[in-house]
Image 1 (tube, helix red, strand yellow):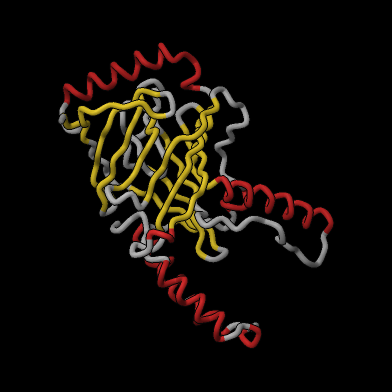
Image 2: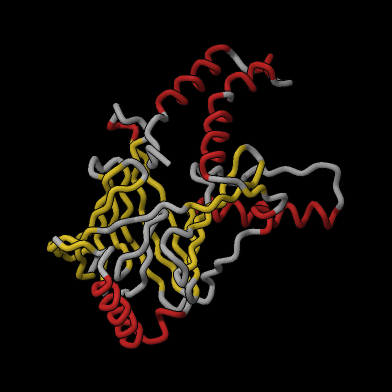
Amino acid sequence: MKHFAGMASKNILFLFFMGLCSMIYGQECNSCSKFYYSFSNQSDSLDVNSKTSHVFILMKKKDSTLFTDIQNKKADSLEAVIWADYKRTKSGTISYKGVPNAKYKYYISKDLSKPTNDIKVYDKIGTGNFMYTDDTKLQWELVDEKKQIVGFSCQKAQTFAFGRKFVAWFTTEIPISDGPYKFRGLPGLIVELYDDKKYFVFSLIRHLKNDNDAVIILPELRTRKLIETTKEKFVNAKKSHREGLVARIKNGPFSQEVSNERIKQIHDNLKKNNNQIELSL
């Protein structure tokens, strides 16, 4: 095993390698690309049947990338159309009926020209838009293991971050130092990523090169009345909002229409959703 970070000579070799790969890879590395990842997660740590599947998209243009749930991207696009139509017609009501409700509402923005611990996260609490910078330092350890994944020759790496041990398989055949979620900093694209219990698994399923539709600009609705905060404050506020859901329903204007059985079901679902990808800040 070799440590990727912390040695000057390795950093020099890494920079040289990335420069060489960029020349070989041509202009594709600096053009627009889309990377689609399947994402499997077990929301209840005690129930293997609580696994759900999602599709995420990593959009890249030059040195910038944007990562989000594809349903989230669709929802924001539809909401933008509805909002524009509402302003144009000046109607008294606005309805978001038919807009998909994505489980994961965050966008993760990375500037690959900056240090690996400068990642901006745009997320929601209720209807509020928030942004925080995550300065988690990823220390990768390269492992002398290789295998083929979706046609790419990949090498294994591992790190301990967010309270969990993660394994990544990256390929130098796509010399983009990025990957799903907040993970980046390896000498190639992360093709597969999972924690040691495989509660959370990202796997590359599709790659579109030179795609001029790879928009990496946040939807306008996500930056309206944006509140900039710290990661710690955001995590605590989101936890409080989640734990207060049942109380808000009971005290809300439509509380009479919600049965006790339905309230119990919501409470039980909240208890089962106990397995987050980040165990610690």
